Image (tube, rainbow, N blue to C red; front, side, top):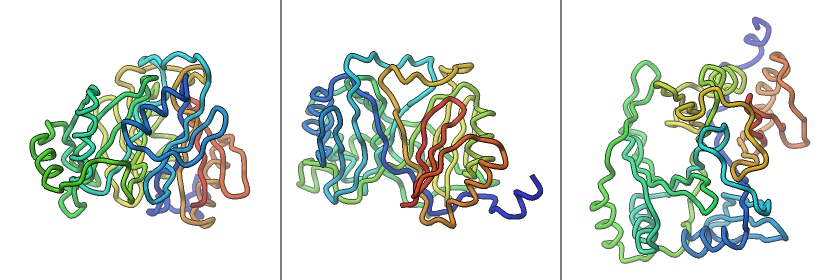
Amino acid sequence: MEQLTSVTPKSIHPATHIGLVTLRVAQLVRSLAYYVDILGFQLQEQTPGTALLGAQDGTALLRLLEVAGIPSQPRSSSGLYHVAILLPSRTDLGRFLLRIAEAGLEIGQGDHIVSEALYLSDPDENGLEVYRDRPRAGWTWQDGLVKMGVGPVDVRGLIAEARQSGQPWESMPAGTTVGHIHLRVGDVALARDFYHTTLGFDVVQQMHGALFVSAGGYHHHVGLNSWESQGAGQASQHTAGLQVYEILVPDRAALEPIQARLTARNVPYQELSNGLNVADPWQNQILIRIA
């Protein structure tokens, strides 16, 4: 470990972020009606059994993979908790809120101090968060941890801002990205060991049964909780849920320290021309790719 520390940075590159997320679904036609027709994702590409969804500027956000007839993922299992879509502005979030309210969808919500978020589940019960960040200058940090919480969203304020804009929701706007991914895990300490010690993400918040890690001072790029999944084993590949997600690094120099730590800690991985394939302790599949 002394040799590893001497040749690698402590933290993952600050420009690291989450990229494309691939979800398994039972019926692609049903999922497209939900994601495209209701939520406003743009269909960028479709082949038999798969669809690539994105934003107005061409940014790819989600890939849907049809596995006919698969059941929903049990909440007590490891795997996807939610994938979080980050909108560029509060007005965009208000316009999205009006759209899903008009569609009659069940909506959860939470003000996390650093962000305002809406929560949904797709037809296969894959969790979705759609949110906007408050400006970083207003985030509060103490001892390396960012202040986050759970309170009610100012729904009336969101709606008023959306109506004032005069622009109806049509599709995911330019500038929309995958802000973070949140996973169910069987043990938070083990999750910390992999995501923080091995991959190099910074721990930015921790609480009972949950851990949040990030790069570059973001509030979190990966959330990890064992609220319903304590003791869970490997994530099933035979239910709806997470197939694979991307962690994007800016260049090969940012990839090499991650590879060195994986090697030093005997974590299996597959080397690719532009990145690495690796799995976390619950076999959640990760493509660490040069953006």
